[in-house]
Length: 127
Image 1 (cartoon, rainbow, N blue to C red):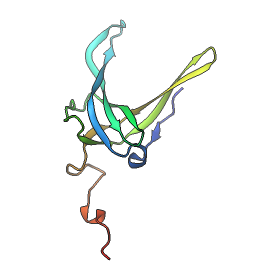
Image 2: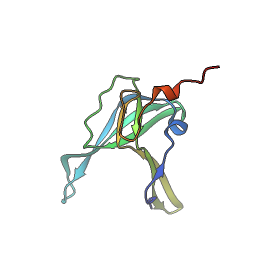
Image 3: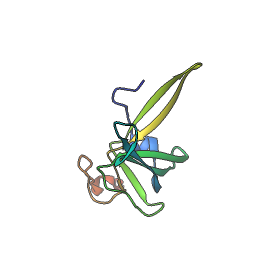
């Protein structure tokens, strides 16, 4: 069982500050005969998440270039979605959750489509 479109995430409330750790794994496409191909389907990265108080794994499509940011570099997710996958067992079901994103980018480095940054709006009002 899967959610139709996943759960859209409020990045600030859900993750707070995210810091890059490392590439965790690459998922390869499976050939018709069941063997693993050389083609990469997606990459999963470990990110330190201060709001969750632990390391989280985030997967991005293989079409996104390999990320090799400095350890502890502050990053943000582009269009993150949480989803679940359930597998039935004799006592009910085991449910696992995962996070996917369109990209992982350095925090506050330029502008991103759909996410314009305006520093004037971020300053507190003068008294």
